[in-house]
Length: 368
Image 1 (cartoon, rainbow, N blue to C red):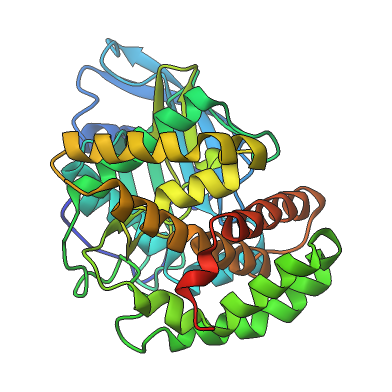
Image 2 (cartoon, rainbow, N blue to C red):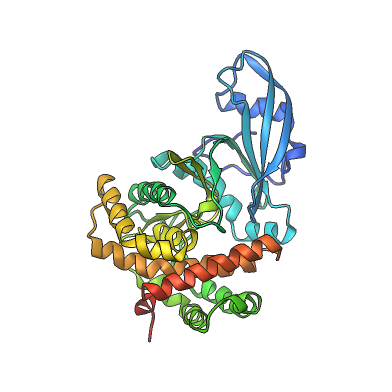
């Protein structure tokens, strides 16, 4: 049942657990034995508790009971499943989000020194609409909240991790990698542009009351020039997480940061994840006060990881790819069912991202 890193076997149907209730001690014995984490013991019982606030997938913490010597085996695991929300699940499957995440952990995570959870088992249905991930439980590390602007300490931890990822894959060609999004490679961004044009009016209906006229005007300009945005930058690209925000990062106090939720990895600018985090996960006033120092720190970390860019190169890409937050927020809201928490989150994010674009004059990179 376990297909380790480097393989891509699927199933004609989901013949593996797709909810926490379906995951038994027998399943866990198989996964832990085949991944080399269980030898002189066996799982005799498993309890689960649903956790997290993800829109595109559901998570559960598993507490395992063993018989025998299980000192080297995990006492808890995190299991990730398809979203219970039918609309979100259908969209995630159709867009390849589940496939992308499973394949990231199988193929790409082993290549980077960015901190990600150890994977104990992964499954993927042949039609890519069902999946299972069994991951290292990083507790007591906890995700941040989009509603609370991140601290300077957490922001520095996150950007250091983003720099490690960006440096690992800098200059790599992902055109033949079907689990890495390359939005402009096949159609010049036409499909994404169509989605944005279709989604924007309804998005404004839902969230326009919280946006200034200047924000809405810039949003419209970005939407109408989506193809330009995803094709204009022709410099070296790298692997970007794509949704690198505080709720997708597990912080262990001020000591470490572990990045999760790899459903939207894409080929993009080396500054995409940094711009997205600063634009959406930091309060606007803090971001304004910190951003130049933090981008210089990010540039220095890239240099330590073997990628040398000038501050001006980094700053210009940071300004241009501030627009990435508009894309993720508009489509994220459109692809998930409305609920009170989700709407509050998307409102907070679009306000921050649009103000970010206005503050750094991202319009310079769009047609007049």
